Length: 83
Image 1 (cartoon, rainbow, N blue to C red):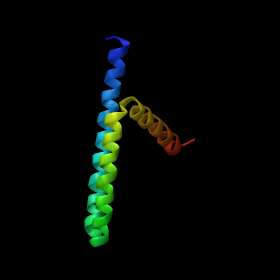
Image 2 (image 1 turned 90 degrees about the vertical axis):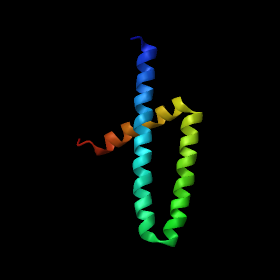
Image 3 (image 1 turned 90 degrees about the horizontal axis):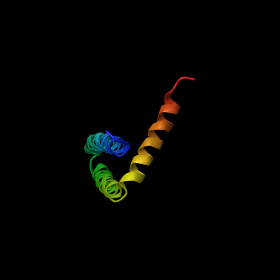
């Protein structure tokens, strides 16, 4: 397996992780929105629009999206680690 294949595999893994995270966020916000009623409906619509924009961005800029995901993961790991 050459470097290009490894990078491609890592990019696919990162994309799967990002999609899993966005699905989790979507499910969580849907539950919260249902609990909030009418105002929740507005939040749900805003969340759906945001998710649609995120998916379009990932589709249009896959390498940049992987870089952002890696950077976010690094920052969150550093914030969560015990020094």
